[in-house]
Image (cartoon, rainbow, N blue to C red):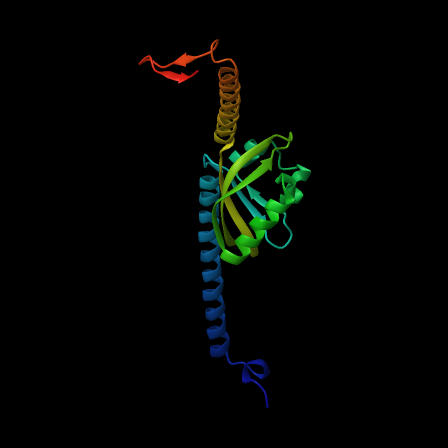
Length: 195
């Protein structure tokens, strides 16, 4: 025949239902109040971090969050069109695709080497460390990274120096082999290195 509550509720039934709804509303308010206290605190910690933090949507590729350090690092503002898609920051689309495949498969990736571009098109070598998370009810990739551009440039300069040294050594050795009476070299112990 139906529910008595909807047909002819008693005063006691209404009072009980009223108490239940008030308790539920209070729980929601407390939960909401706790959430509003936690969110600004977390946001403050993330924004104050001394390293770039980026959160990107898995589904759309849109940049959902950048901390202040990341905004400064990339040289973008909150209104920048670069933030529409994370791929705008990647130098190599194939490298980005490899990164996405790994993060989706492994759920977490540490020290992935990549080259990113800033708003003024400067190439920056980085080590990405990322994890799949849920951000504002959306599947996302949480990423922090370390800039290793200086290390990469120093290593490249070292390798170029080694190549120049080997080339010069080969040339001098060839000269010494061709003209043995004119060119020689001795070490500090007065031993011939080549002649």
